[in-house]
Structure formats: C-alpha cells, structure tokens
Amino acid sequence: MNRKSLIKYFRLIFLLLFSFMLSCGGDDDINVVIIDDEGETPISVDFDIIVSETNTFEISVNNTSTGITGLNSYWQFTENGEVVPDVAGPERHVYTMSGDYLVTLTVEAPDGDIAVSKTVIITGTDEGPALKVATNNTFSMGMAVRSDRLTGSHNAVLVREFNNLTAEFEMKMDQIYKTEGSLDFTAADAIVDYGVANNMDIHGHTLVWHNSIPGWMNNFSGTDEEFETLVKDYITTVMQRYAGKVRSWDVVNEAIEDGSNNLRNSIFRVRMGDDYIQKCYQYARDADPNAILFYNDYNVTFDSGKQSAMFAIVDDLMSNNLIDGVGAQMHIAYDFPSKAQIQSVVDGTVSRGLKMHFAELDIRVNPNNDITSLTEQRAIAQQNKAKEVAEIYNAIPDENKFALTLWGMRDSESWLPAFWGQPEWGLFYNEDFTPKKSHTGLIEGFR
Ligand code: 9MR
Image 1 (cartoon, rainbow, N blue to C red):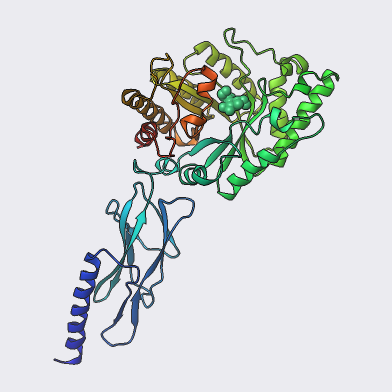
Image 2 (tube, helix red, strand yellow):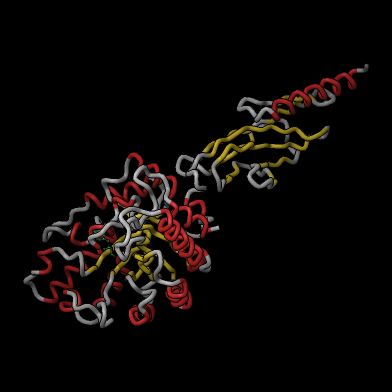
C-alpha cells in the first residue's frame, strides 16, 4: 500500500467512525481534522450554537471551521429538511416547534463532504411555538401588563411569547397625574424600562380617556384656555419622556358615546370644544413625530353605527395627517361578534391605508352566566373563536399589520369577572401559566 492509499484507507475508517457518532445523536465536542492528500492543509470543521436568551425558539450558528477557504458549505436545521447556504457571519434560524434538533454543517471538501452535527434542544410550550414566533415576524404580539407582574413566571411567559407591551392601567392620566402640578412616572417607567431591556415595543395607552381623569382635573377651576394648556402640556411631557421607547400611542380612547354614537360629552369636549380630538392628535404629532398614533375604541366590529362614527373621526384626523392606525378593542365572546363583523373593521382600516391594531383581546366564555367552571366544550369554543380572530388578523396585508394584543395573562388576572359580576375565563393561560386551548387557537390561526 503506497502513502496515498494508506491515507485514503485511514480516511475511510475515520468517516465510518464519524458517521457512527452522528447516528448516536450528535455531540457538542465533535471536531473533524482531516489532512488532505498532500498532508498540507488541515481542515477542521466545527461551529458554535447559541440559543437566544429572549426567544428560546431562535438559535444563531457560527461556522468556526479552519482550512475551508474557497469551499462551499451549508446548514441543515432538520425541522423541514431545508438546506441553507453558509454565508459569512452568524446565521439565525427560528424553530416553530419545541423538540431536539440535529444541526448539521456540511463542508464540500475536494475528497468528499465533511459534516459535523450538534443537537440543540428547543423548549417552548407543549402546544407549539411561542406566539411571537408564530406571527412569522409580520406583526407584534402584545400583552397587557402591570408593573407588579413583570417577574418570575410572568417574566418567563412575557419574554418567550411577546414583543409588544401595553400598560393595563399605569400609563393612564389618573395614574400619572394623580396630583395637580406633579407627574408620577414610577410605575410607567418600570414598565417602559422592562420593555426596553427586553427588546419589546411599548404601546402607550392612553393619553386622553374620559374614564381616567384625575379627580382634581374634573374639578379644575381655571379657565378653558388653562385647561387646554394643561392637556397639551400633559400630552407633550409624557410623549417626550418616552420618545424612542414608546413606539405607538392611543391618543384619544373611546370618544364615542354608546347608543347615540355622538361624541361623548367628556370634560375634554366641554372644555376644549368639539374639535378637541383634532387638537389632542396635533399635540401628540408635534410632541413625538415618530410615534405611531392610534384611535382606539370598543364594539366597533358589530355596531355598524359606532363603526361609522369612528371612521368619521378617523377621516377627519387623516385629512390633517394626524393618525396612523385604528385600534379595535377585541372584548368579544366565544359566539359573538361574527367573522364578517370583525372583518368589516379590518376592511375599513385597510382601505384607508392605516395600521390595524387588534387591541385588548379577551374572549368571554360565560356571557350568559350558564357555567360555573370552564367546561371542555366552552374551552374548545373559545379556542375556535381565538383561531378565527388570528386568521382574520393574519390575512391583513403586511403593511397594515401592527399588533394583536391580549388583555391579560391568566384568567384570575382579568378585569372581566369584576366588571361583569360573574365568573369568566376570557384569557389565554391557566393559573400555572401553561397555555389554555385559546392559546392553541391563536397559534392555529396564525399558520
Ligand atoms: O383592564 C383595565 C383595568 O385593569 C383598569 O382598572 C381599567 C381602568 O383603568 O381599565 C381596564 O382596561 C380598559 C382599557 O384601558 C380601555 N378599554 C376597556 C378596558 C376594560 O375596561
């Protein structure tokens, strides 16, 4: 046997040995060193895998091989058999399901391919991928939060599943502006800082809402002009404090009166005039020209009169380029409103070229107070409604998508039971933070 045959013989033995190691499931320390025919260039094939800290479904791989300059190489992540060319720098891959995956880097060497594999364990919910992964990055997954629910299991769910946060109440005027002449940002800052630290967008909710006026402002004894200045200064100060951190704002919330569909006779309307909405959006635009400005309201799917009143407000704002999106609050039930009704508010928003926010999603399962615990049947009905909502949202053109926001995490944390005075299970996580069937419905709808 001459020298060349001897090298080929040893190489064969080596490759067989290597294949055997691969079939054993991969090993973090596999490293191949092959001397080429002339014994000149050592080829060492290896790579690093890092699982993202903020998204456990995302890995980044980096080829650290030596001696392979000029050779083609490619990755396989094994989820769908796809072959991805290896280009310079780290590569990112996002899995859609939890599981153990063999990641393989193959180098096309002159005497045959050299492959190295490593196993990466992707953990997520048993029901499937994280919500923010299931969106395929075409929109954000939002969650209502409170400053005292950002640690422990809340934190784990938030970082795994969400990339957009709305303060459930701590960024409203009655919280920030409790005392005349002094703004208190303690809780709001905690939420914004948490979002920034975790690479999440913050949706500001809400600057002007008839339901969150501090007592002293209701009784304000100054002139109308002074009142208007107060509101302008408030909007300006809050938005500028969070410019670059809070990406979007509900400027005016729920301005339409139930029943009549006229403008509510809130203190803002009384003090600032019928054009108070225009004024507030102008202050907001001036305060942070980069912020995405929304009008947000409820019952605008099935109540066609209210929907028209809302779009009239929106059209007015559009004529002065003061609005970028519509927030349709999704406080719905397992059997109501219909798919067509939900679609109608999407159509009105998309036809105007605006962004659509499905805000404040919860799905009541007990609107008629006919159950005393969450039955299997009702949980499935809730799952189906969640799937329908997700499908409708997913079908929106990408440029009109913004976020779908869930109005709380666990059923026990929802505003619904206290508000309706009866048991409800309107949300997406069980008490132990595991996902409910309604969560699975969302994932199914995004597919
Ligand atoms: O769910 C919120 C609840 O925790 C607060 O106490 C309440 C008052 O700040 O606001 C609730 O959220 C409302 C939202 O801000 C606007 N649309 C209706 C929501 C339910 O009342």
